[in-house]
Length: 65
Image (cartoon, rainbow, N blue to C red; front, side, top):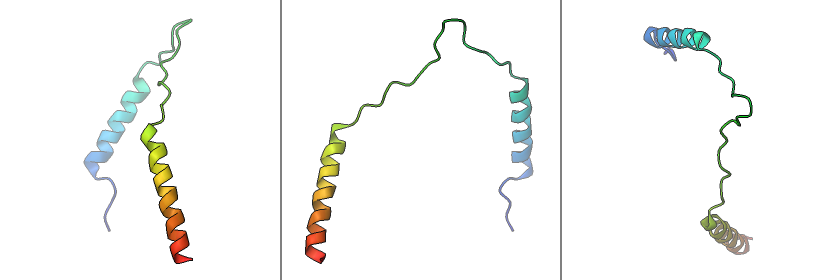
């Protein structure tokens, strides 16, 4: 039977856990907004691909029905 983690992995995970527990918790300063990701803009090619796949699906449905 194989194990997911070996002894070295477990030791590294334990060290990371201890460091994370010791790390100071820093809250945003008063009035400072947390960094937010910019909204993802849709790729115009997505609409083209969706349209192509929908067309191919319709053709296949007609052919095999």
